[in-house]
Image 1: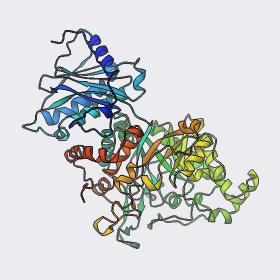
Image 2 (image 1 turned 30 degrees about the vertical axis):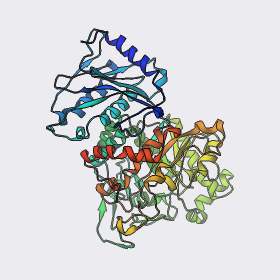
Image 3 (image 1 turned 90 degrees about the vertical axis):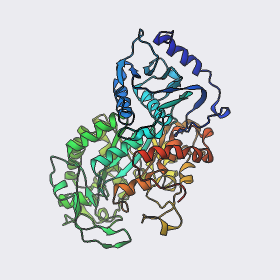
Image 4 (image 1 turned 180 degrees about the vertical axis):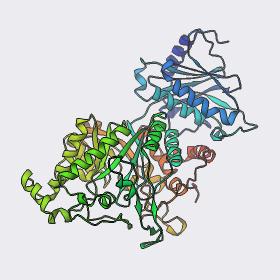
Length: 545
């Protein structure tokens, strides 16, 4: 029996943690955690999870306690009891999840974890912080913890450690394009689970494309009846030749709600992307009156950029998009709504009477300012509903909408420009964050990809805050994100192969402070994480390939 009351014990542990020396001076032995914690010190002994171990959780964090119970029950075979944390309860043989709203040092997502032979205590200011502490606990346990059936012969030990940890950035994200190739709901959930394991908190769901509209919009049923289907797809080995096989699918609103709720349980925000004004051929095929020429249009079969885009001079387009975004906002509680804004050719606008009339009416200089007008108008609509707009860095062209945030993908320059202007930025440059790029310079040994070359070490070398950005503007860098475009990724297995372990490297970039990151150290810790991915059935790219 531990002689201290619950609250006294936890305060004592937090007091000790405040004096943990810099982790770089500590021997972390065989404790390998990704992303790397801020401070970690080994202590004596270990905690063993037993059939009678209890999970004690603060009343406002019972969701995290149930998550931990459901994580541990299948591999251990133990149905651990979850109780509300109370002062009179003994902490002996317990895993404690303690909310401490006064622990300002943890921030909104940080935590402290103490493991001793008597108990594991995780304390945090928020339930999100407790959840990330649980992800660290997960990596401290044997990798068989990921199995979904009972594993014999495993001692479920947690090494003695003292950890304090918190993330560097508030936006730690991964993207998935389901427009080019669609993935089942079960895989989307698995993808979210993998983000949670890596302490990522944002899932960017790219839902509409030239090649397919993937979300049910009840007011416009043709978007899925017509827009979700294309007649053929390019062969991976020859992008100029079609396979002749019809391809389609979409997510019902019920399925979308299911995914969003699943992500929320894992403290992940789902940011939906509805592309505009470009990448919109699937919508035009469904409702031809929304294009400059009036069609007819077909859902695009080839990859690349289409000249047909929404007509920026047509009031019906704005009404349509407001209706669509209205339904999207009912499904997604995310503050940010992504409107794309990239790769919008101006050819049709230059020849369109309605677009030219809009340019004249609004006193715009050219088609670039017309795009800015389009984007600003959509932003005002989102702002009127309490949301914020985010888009690819092309939304800078012609002037940036006042409160918009930018995803800088064509390099760091767009992000620097936007942040200098006072706009929030998510860094996602192709050079470091496009996970659809080849992972080897010998393309013969890799599955077909869109091109490029992005090895693991290059991802790890990303520094989201450019050195040339003025110090008083660095606060506008929200974080970074990996993008998984799927022109050449037709299956869930291949999506995993392209994403991992490069997403693991990015997870450390956005969580861990720069001075504590070193690639050789990361590679030394990575095999431990890969064993967890093995247990989860992830088809990651082997390190020695």
